[in-house]
Each structure stands twice: as structure tokens, then as C-alpha cells.
Image 1 (spheres, rainbow, N blue to C red):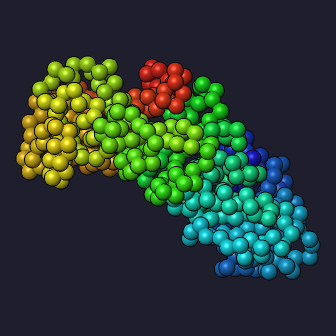
Image 2: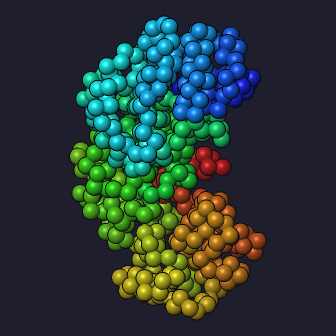
Image 3: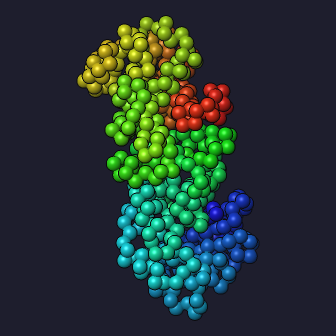
Length: 470
């Protein structure tokens, strides 16, 4: 069940929000900022679905909070969610409300939870027990999921922060009876997904029978991948879901990774770091030392590089005349630059590498047997394929790895950044009406190659992928 969590300031605000989300069958009225005059009776009278009342701001005015809890019980709310630290304040309420009690413990700082706290909670009769913990790395969610199976009683485990988002979407893996969503732009806890993004990116809710796929990386919130691959699962009627897995500690990630995670996309800065965790890999991973796609084979992981295969396919199919250019200049010395070098290794004589740290460009060029360009000199872009493989411009459209005025009418630009959709360099290229391969096209080709690695011929066609992203 999906619960819409609403930060209440007045009954009319709550009811107006409910009206915008008519499909929701349960609402949490979160009264952290609510006045004592909050008309809970009006909310109960107007809304026929299930209602939960809670307040986390009990330290400032405990009498007001206690009064609101009392009103919620009197007005017939289905549940009251009470933090265990506030339970002594409610002991004076002259009724047994254990059948309506959601007893909570929250750690907003980190994921630590003591068994002493669990024992303390379980000694208090309640309809449900809820624990909210803040996680910073996805392996913590795996560890908590494993640990929760041995707890004395069922617990609704709510994991906060970006690393906890997948657990909220896939709440049935945690045997949670419900999950919390929010109105767009009004989260009531870190890591909540709003109802609009839920519908757009995830759609249906995965059950225990679903296999999971996901994107593994440092920053993954900007990724198109969940939307694209979940659309694929929907159209192919596959019992799968694709989630975000922000990670730093790969040792713990792969040690604790559940068996129902079947495939991974890998993004910055982990494309090279995952290679030691592979049991085998394709020739493009071997050539580049970079892996962006993993598939589970029993207990082992097999690696692929669809950054490389996708780039080559996009160039060959969208701009087949690229091979007639005088040279290819690759900007950058990271995983994507390595993938580009692996993809174009049959044209070494025309490839040059540039990086703002010159020794990195020189070292990379030596490894692949290509040329490098000095950092402190302007280079000529006439009749050139320019492959932008740096992070310059990511989430900042005012940044460019090189001055955009260096572009010429005979330059072909390959842009790898799709957030923002049009970088400063890409915008200049479009103004000049020069040939450009947009980052969204690179994404589409590499993502389709991932689908074919995971599911064979079921993967999207290029045309289907274009429709999804249009």
C-alpha cells in the first residue's frame, strides 16, 4: 500500500492535497508545523480512506502535540504514529490505543540501531513497529534487510536518504505493509519519492517475485536509466524493476548484494573500480579497463562495456561519414575516454587525447598507442570528430572543457553529458548548425546494448528507444 505523507498546516491544505491524489488510499497527516487548532475532525469526515496521524516536533511544545494525538484518537484516525521517546508523554491518555499504535524509532544521523532499543520497543504493545534509519551507502540497506529477518517481531523498516530510496520503492522486499510517498516538492523525510516521479519512473511496485536491476555509482540521482529500463520492462511485460544504487564501498556492496539483483549499470566513478569484482569480461572491458554493464551468472558477475559498443554503433549508424574526417580528438582521461579509445582502436592513427591534466593524457595515449595534445595550446578542430568525454558541464550548463568558439563548421561533436540536456558546447554546436551526436543518443545506444546483454533479442530496437526518450 502507498501512503501519501502530507506536512499539515491546516485541514484545508491536507484535503486539497488529497484531492490531487485521488488514487491514494491511505494518508499520513504529519503535524510537525501544525497549530493546536488543526481540525483533524474535518479531515476524518471528508476523507474515507485510512488515516495516520504523527508529529515529530514533540520537543518544542509537548502539550500541543499531546493534544493533537488525543484529537486524532477521538476523531477516529486509523493509526497514530508515536516516537518511542514521546510515549511517556501519552501515557496519561485515558484509553488503550495499542491497537492503533505505530511505535517508531528514528535515527536521522546514520544507520545504527541497538538491540537494546529493539527490546525496549517490543516490550510496548503496538499494532506496528517502525524504524527509520539514515543510510549513506546502499550496502547498508542490504545489511539491514538481512538483519531484520532475525528480529523478534515484524518491523516496518524505513530507510532514509538517497541510498534508501530503492528500499522505499521495493518495500515488499522488506515485508513492509506500506511505503511513504510525498507530494511533489514537499518531502516529509529524506529519500521519499513523490507521486509524480513514482508514476513516471517506476509505475508498478515490485513484489518478491521480481528481479532487480539498477545503476551503481557515486551520483545516480540524475540518471535516465531507471525511466528507460522500467519502460522496457513495462512494454515487454517483464517481472523486473530498475533502481538507483548509490555506492562507495564496493567490498561490502558485492559481499551483501542479494541474489535477486541480476544486472547492474555502472557509472562514474566506479567503472574501473568494479573490474576486480568480475569473474570474466568482454574484450572491450579488457581493452579499456572500464566496465559499465554487469550481469549475474550464478554467484559470479560478468562485465561488459556498452559505453564503447554503444558509441561505435551510434557513430556508424547516425553519422557514418565520421571515418572520413582527418582526426578524432577525445577530451578526457577517465572511464568514458578509455571506452572511446577501445571502441575506435581500429583507427589509432587518427586519434588524439587531450586532458586538462597533461600527464594523464600522455599516459593514456601511450597505453593505447595514440597521440596526445598539450594542455597549454589551442588545437585545430577543422574536419575533426570531437568526443567530449569529461565531466565538465555536468549539472552546470555554463562550464565547457574547451572554449566553445574553437568549434568549426566542419567539426563533428559527440557530447556525453545529458544533464543539462544541452551543454554549453552542444548549444554552440547547434547554433553553428554543425553535426552533433547528442548525449541522449549515446545513452540510448548503450542502454539498448545493456538490455540485449541482460535479455537477448527482447531488448529495444533503436526506434523503440528513440520513442521512449522523445
